[in-house]
Length: 289
Image (cartoon, rainbow, N blue to C red; front, side, top):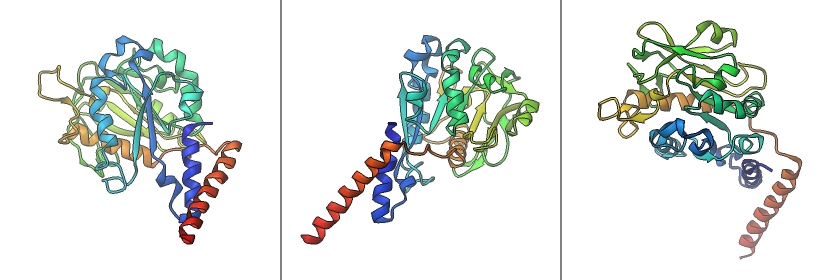
């Protein structure tokens, strides 16, 4: 049984007695593939690579996401050593970083099934050689001019502020607005040349029962690097620059519009009842004492 269902069942048991929301008690779990799984070609752009460390730390920072944070939801990030039905059952969102098309083939079926069954996807595409998961959903990437991107709510204007002139770097891409419209999606932002650089879907919009979906045409709009010659290339999360604001606004929106958690498996109900019995026992002993 998936670990997140165990956690949710225990939280529900507590909620039945104490009135606490089971959903808010369980963290929103975000997973991505390790570099060892997707190959050295992904380099530091893998989920456990240095270039995504700032983003992951910002998601887990309780000042950003947590009971007293800017967004009232706790986020937990995990690195996956495999991407299949079993590992994806333990996360709410799968983040696909700079994954080559060749490595995407092995995980395509599992990721697609996860998404169409209500799991959320955060696809950080970049170019036509690293857009395999998006292409399988009919949303491929082609080369853009690389000019800065702008837009409105919810991605560029959200709880973390207003982002302007969000930069693309290195290999840069664009998305097809006709393909986005055909899949019932929304254009998230365009660059100075009118090319679409991001798109999003609320849960159920791409297909009935599907999770939320976000696709960006350049991972470096969210990653943090230094090779461009500036002190920070891409997103800064401490302090927040425009790319960082855009990244956190986008994530905040997507998790708030995500798919429904899986229904607990049959054995989970037994665990839930056992947890409830423990809680009741503790309360009984407190009253006696």
